[in-house]
Length: 214
Length: 214
DNA sequence: CTTTTATGAATGAAGG
DNA sequence: CCTTCATTCATAAAAG
Image (cartoon, rainbow over all chains, first blue to last red; front, side):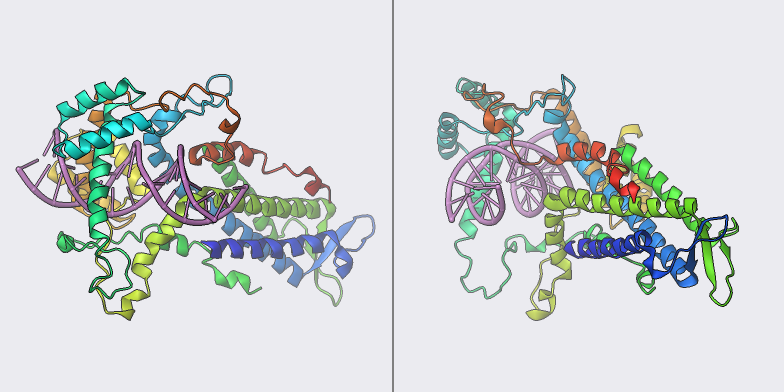
């Protein structure tokens, strides 16, 4: 990722040289010509320009594509977020709403949640969620979804913490995280490599090396 | 958002015309000149070229910056994913690299899925799934199971979203501080920054009048 | 102010 | 279909 940006920079620098040439035609490019005032370029210079311009056209196209891809992703993933804080944005008076995007439990709520979690069955059914939510609302803004998520995360992370302590025990791999319990999850039809996005960006950098040859 | 892309396209088209002119100097630009073969341009043509090139330089710089901003957050994770399969560790230990992560739709795929979901019958029958999968394969690795799951999840969650529209909101008691000093966070928000980028792109083209002065 | 960590939320996949 | 789990993402909070 950094790579292509560097290359882009180089391109731009390169281009700047061209511009410099244009701006300082002391190289003998330009001269007067009778009543018709013209600038004169050698074939080489002309070719250079052509190629340089072609390079820019390519770069811009690529950048547009890349940006399209990136923003498409963000737009779609943002769609879900958009409901909270993006929809009413800017609409009123151009003032940012600056709504909080993420619920944060108050200390009191947290305490109560922890207590319920420890004593509870660990499977807070829907009805239970409702109750808890009702109760916690007394101590601050909260929704059933918040409670649901909280228990989900709490359980998942409580569970993970247990497997981590037994990490460097008999396992000599430099690999940080692998899931041992359900390792057979490579079960369905295909191994899906999600190299869909990364490699695509890779050959996006500058796929026309010959253009650099001049 | 769409706006600047269109303008980009226009720019590119515009540029292509220039290239065309360069490649087809039937406009009387070029002529012979004794032993030194040169191309000749009028001042106007030269000026046009200069401007065009300058515009490209500016656009590229701006695009690089924009892209940098947009991807600063998200493409780091993308790179991280990239490491999983391009990983040199593959050869080192002969150790299992434990299969891929879960499938993630590419932006294009997501777009197409969303479109189908909205317009479609909502009942992705077996045959339909096959078709969709075939089509989406053109844009990245995907399996019928992926498509199936996606529709299942999409429907279920879309449904739940309606029953519980009240997602969440601000903190608890200490929220009322609306326009507090720290409210003006310097931290760029992804979606917002994109929105900002659009207007910025708008004045990208000619925002440096001095560049036109030469 | 920048970097790291903790954690609320989103989502692909499995089970029933 | 619905629920549940596991993983990932993004960001508020904490650390430097």
